[in-house]
Image (cartoon, rainbow, N blue to C red; front, side):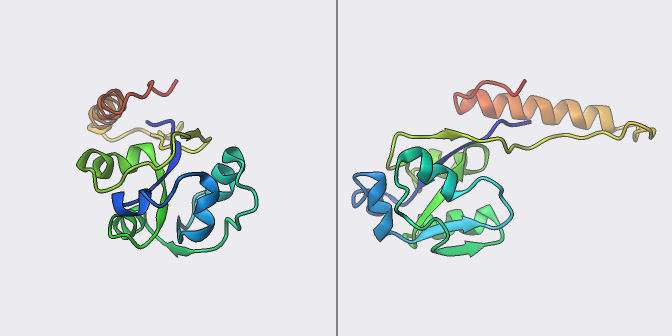
Length: 144
């Protein structure tokens, strides 16, 4: 459904304090538990390898992490598909131009050896249309 990209996101009041990725050393990093690609990957790509990517606060959902970031509690590593509503509303902004493609995404899986529910094809079609529409609205290429 999606091919994810990540970038730091924060409240506008926090963004004015962040001129370079190295400035993140003075910020609270917000993490979402369970994601494979996180702050370490982005910080490495940005050349900010002196920052301990494991510091900060971890939550169990993206929604909580984005809400904390929007409230000024730190900087979240936003995923394109999940952070889009916050970016469109202006409650979260990207203080840096680097957005990084990652290997993670969201997928629709169908069992190979089972008869699908009669409504499954309609649901899968709807999900694919939604993902394509959301991706086009965000300026993203569709997932291959």
